[in-house]
Every structure is written in C-alpha cells, then in structure tokens.
Length: 265
Image (cartoon, helix red, strand yellow):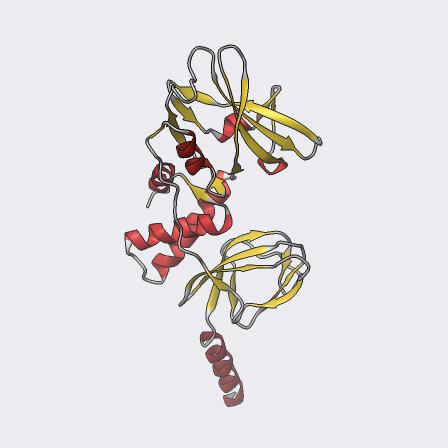
C-alpha cells in the first residue's frame, strides 16, 4: 500500500512539474501519440510529442507560464516534434489603421497591401469619389481563382455612398451559388465606372475566415487567461489580436474593435 501511495505521489509530482500547453488553433494534419488530431482546448505537457503529417501544418498553443506559442512546420520537414523548447513565442499583433478617407492611390495601397488581410465583419473604408467613384453605376469588383473549378470568378462589392463594404458574404456569391472561402485565392480589386470601363486597382491577400472558428479560438484564449489570473483587459485584447495575426492576418482596427466587443467580454 505504501509503495502504491509513493508511486502515485511521484506520478502526481511529475505531472505538476510539467508546464501545460493548451491548444488554440490547428491547421493541417497533426496527431498525438495515440493517433488523435488535437482539438481546440486540448491540453499537453512540455515533454509530449506530436506528429506533423502535412506540409505547412501549424499548431497554436497557450503555455501556462509563457503565454501564446506556435509551431509551424516548414516545407519538407514533416515528422515528430516535441513541444518542449520547440514552440516559438507568439508575436505582438498590429491591426491595420483605417485611414478615414482614401484619397490617393498611395493611401489605397498602404491600406490594402499589408500582407495577409483578415476580413472581419464590418470591414469598410471610404474611398474618395475623385479617386474611384462608386455612385452613378460605378463600383468595385473582386476577382479571384476558384481552385476546385480551375477558373476565375468575380464578385461585386457593396457600397453605401463612398463607403466600400468588404463583406465576406458578397465575396462568396457567384452566379447564384455560394462558394467556399478556402476554395478561393489570388484576389484582386478591380474598379469599373459608369461606362463599364474596368481598371485593375491592386492585388490583395484577403483571408476570409470562418467566424464560428475565430470566435471559439478567441473565447478559449480569453478563458485560459482568466483561469491563470490574467485579468488585465488591455492585455487580453492584445493577446487575441496577436493570435489573429499569427494564424490569419491583420484585421482593420475599427472592425477588430467592433468584433472584439461582440465576443461578450
């Protein structure tokens, strides 16, 4: 009996002595030692090993003492990875500042050409009519590649007056059908005037998220921080922004603030 108690105590101490990793994001095929794909909220210890089975697989984690971490597997290096001393620190997140009114091509490029652009609900920007008029039958299209069809597609973007509304719902509609966000790539912004004269504006690296997944990951991260006694509101918000930038892209700052408020913090 005494031996059993000692073994149980040693086991308990070994578990307690290991830092915990909580899963925040999974992309690609990853398996644990039992062949199970990690899921949001799962917990691992720093000595655990995971198998990264596909090129570009990524894992987002929250470390019990070091905060956000991620593991990204570069091309050609799939295989087993140990969490200890491998997960890199999450980066500080920076959102895209909305310029208010875009009145020059340089301002437009500065807003749209920032790398991966995460489209959160309510993303919108005012474009001066002297630059690209949207009234009088003018406006913007988004063109893209539909991978499953091996063909190009396009979607007309909504506007209210001079305000261009970057709604994901608009972008997924083509010929009366709803497309899948992960089936689209190679986005480009195109303007057309009242005479239907088309003008290529710029290429854009839009990221069209699944909002339910995004919300669940953010709520999991906030719950873990509260559980660990991290209750500073500014830090919580900064950590959520950093998570979005790590795994999706930079959001518009105004859209991010509105989305974050709706999380119900």
